[in-house]
Amino acid sequence: MTEQPPMTTGAESATDDESTLSRRERFRKLAALDTTSGALLLVAALVAVVWANSPWRETYSSFLHTEIGPESLHLHMSLAHWAADGLLVIFFFVVGVELKHEFVAGGLRDLKLAGVPIAAAIGGMITPALFYVLVVAIGDPEGLRGWAIPTATDIAFALAVLAIFGRGLPVPLRTFLLTLAVVDDLLGIIVIATFYTDEIDFAMLGAALAVIVVFGVLVRQQRKLWPLLIPLGVVAWALMHASGVHATVAGVLLGFTVPAIAIRGESRPRTEWFDDAVRPYSAAVALPIFAFASAGVTVIGGEGSIVQPVSIGIALGLVVGKLIGVLGSTWLMTRLTPLRLPDAIGIRDLLPIGMLTGVGFTVALLIAELSFEGGSDDHAAAAKAAILFGSLVSATLAAVLLRWDARQARDNDMNRDNIPDMNRDYIGG
Image: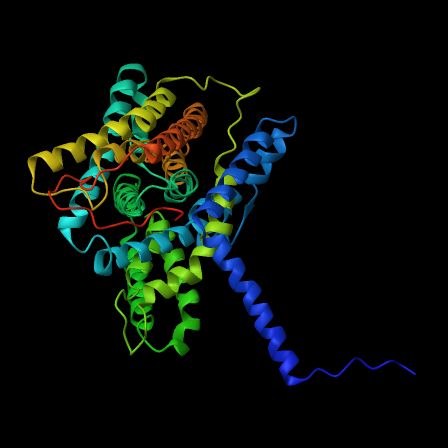
């Protein structure tokens, strides 16, 4: 006689469902942590670098150059391109959602609060670009196309370093860095869309924008219509890619359509819902895969020299240019205008923050690929190596400075606005 499985009661089934949901929720929260995202990026980059410099380096290259996808839809691309043009759209969608929330309900809605980090972001982009141009124009004018590479800041890595080494520092410092990095990403997206688009198919672009408008209408409706959002997002991405504009721009525009104010009697804005839902996939899937596909620079046994004007310009831009740009523009804004730093933050605190902005990585690697795509392999390899080196040096120096800053005594008016600081919340506290 066959033994029958034990009967499952409704209560037991409900408990199992709750347990599964609980595990899923714990995974989502873990994946969305700053430290988890940074660790996954670092591991993926290390695996790529080790593989690309191992005796099996050719298999790494051939694997990433494997082409898949329908050619009739202009989507027959290498795996490396799928990572950069496809998966990275998830990350840029999260960036778009975050930007929308910051502009409508966050730190960027009030210019008095956002003015200084916005100025810091602009200075932190202009100065590294100038460093790069000065070095490369003298030694290798052909490499000038990469001028925007050292202007980018990697939000995930920078926040991860701050979370680990910034314990004991005021929470507004994280808000300042996040605001600066978000503006930095917005400017980076504008640079990609403006300077790295060669030809535009306006019919395809118009179709992509039309689909994004439909997405924006549906995202404001009842949640029962939301299953249509993913197919619409994929169509908008494909049309944007076919238009000649970099496909990641579609992700940002889709993110911008999400309402940042609570509607339909809901308890919180939909930007928060989408951020919670999509960020874990961006942090745990999209960014690590892109890092694996882009960070594999062959140094051992590779052809050409890694040390050249392009790599020197990028390294100087990330390590020195970013710091000077952020500190210099902040100093000018607080001295020449009525704007002041946020509560509990002083100029001293921005020294490690300036170093953190030199952690370029994700967007910098993307711009490097766009800059030298179809051009000199030597330039591309040198640029990626410099991004990894500059980001590592910046992160290391920032970690040391964060611990130094946390040990210093703090007074009651760090931002020198003649008003006692009220914020007493600290990172990790």
